[in-house]
Image (cartoon, rainbow over all chains, first blue to last red; front, top):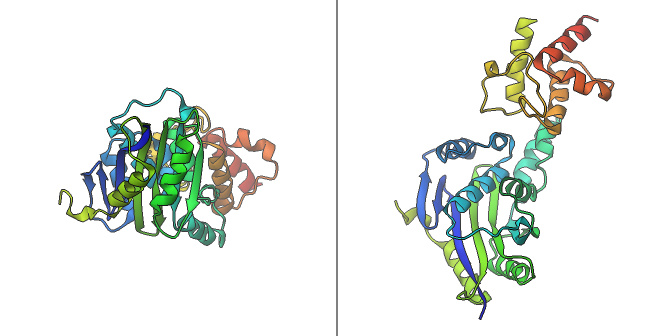
Length: 211
Length: 85
C-alpha cells in the first residue's frame, strides 16, 4: 500500500544547522544577520542574490540548499511535480517592522518586496526550479497535522511526486527552521505515522546532537 | 567627477547590499542592468531612492531611467548636470 516518507530534513536553530541529524554548521554568534552571512560563506554557495534577501528568505534558501545537497532521492524530472508547503508564526513581521522603520525616512523598495511571508517560497522555487503547488500557512506554533495533511493531499494529486515542507520562523534574532522532503512511497508510512515522525524530529533536543 | 564616481560605487554597494563586491570591482562604464552587475527592477528603485537621499535629485521623467542608470559614469554625469543646473 502506498504511504509517505520523509526523505531528508534540515534544522536551523540556536545559530547551528543540522542536516539529517548531523550538525554541519555551528556558530558562537548571537546575531542572526552575522550567522546567515557566515553560514552562506561556509557552505560555499555562489548566489549573490542571497545578500539582498530578508532573513526569512535567507534561512529558507540555506535550508533548501543543504537539504537538496544531501537528499538521498532522485529528483523528479518535472519541476511541476515538486510542491512547497510552508508555515510559520511570525509571517513576514521581522521585515514588516524594518520596512515600517525605513518608511519614516524613505521607504525601501528592497525591503518592501519581502513584506509577505510567501516570498521565501518564491525564492526557494527560483533557486531550485520548483513549479508545483505551493502554500504558506500562518499558525501559532509548528503544526505537524496541518503540514502533513496538506502535503499528503497535494501528494495524492496526480502529477505531484515530491513535497518540500516545513516551518520557517524568524523574528529579530529568533529563528526556528525545520525543512523536509516528503514523498510517496511503496514502503511508506501512514499519514498518522508521518505526523508523529515530523513531531518527533521537530521536538528533538538538537543541542545534544553532535555536541 | 572621479571622487563622485568613487562615492557612488560605495553607495551602490551599500544600498543594494552587494556584499560580494568591493566598490572598486565596479567598472566606471560597466553596464549596471541585465549584463554587467545584473541589477533588477527593485535595484532600479533603490537607485532612485539613493539619488533622492544622497543628492536631493528627483528623476522627473521615468523614461530617462535606462539612460541615467546605464553605468556609474552616466549616473555621475546626471548628478553633476543636475546639481550645477
